[in-house]
Length: 371
Image 1 (tube, one colour):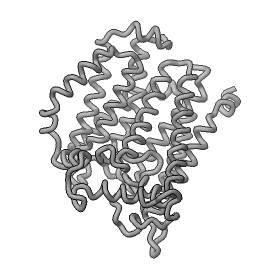
Image 2: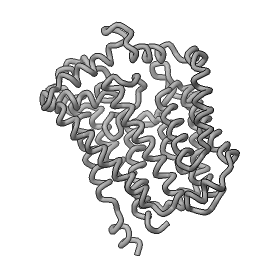
Image 3: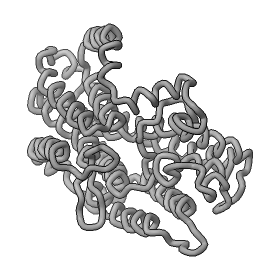
Image 4: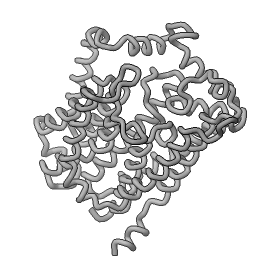
């Protein structure tokens, strides 16, 4: 019965879109790191290995019983908190930041695990508070004080990642967590009061930012030298604009090949896509992401179990936020905060987490009519 249900309700649309996006991402990691003397760079080889192993992770999270994963979520998430603390104290120092734990062939970033398992932690917490699975009943039965423990966990994760320092990922975890609590039904007064506190304390918060973080915000506001502080943003805009309608052609992006565009295979890979495939190619990639996110939203609406909906909303939130922030960075409407483009940017940990999230969402799709 499980096998029949599995193949019947397996979300082939989700899987096909995911596979297509991963393939296109690999092509542009290849392009961004291509050199005539060494066509297959080490970055591309690692990303290809990460994609193959990531698809195995996708299938693992796709077929594993959700109830089994729920039983482990508390232990797993508190373990992640411990890893974040260890990273802050003894992590691998790169460019003044301790964000990674070195493994055999890859740098592992524990903050990415927080994005994956935070939704499960929150869902399991509220399932223990109220075993009923319907949202209207849940909203009416949970007082504000019940939200305090998950709020404490969310802010603990936020501050540990912020101290690495990694403001972009910290904000991603914070906003994903707050979206979850909003979806569950936390009082709107919480957001109103929190917003007022942030606005009032803005001068104080500004003094706590690192110099480079202040510089990035000032660059967004139009300040800085185009050859110094504004260099990354200006080169990204040039790459995007120079692609025109149809682009310069695969492997022919001059901003990329002549090394004008920094971080072309990581944070600014969308700029490479725009330069080489133009407006039409970029539009096609955006359309694929739009179809993937729309499909996931459709699955969330169909899911009968509210706690599975919580997990799905949390997983979708970090993917959509990463997508929007990365595109905003590349086109110059958001500050550069180092958020990668899911399934595209080079980075094995981020690729694994993105594929695990999508596999988990497919798992929910398979069981959306059952539990």
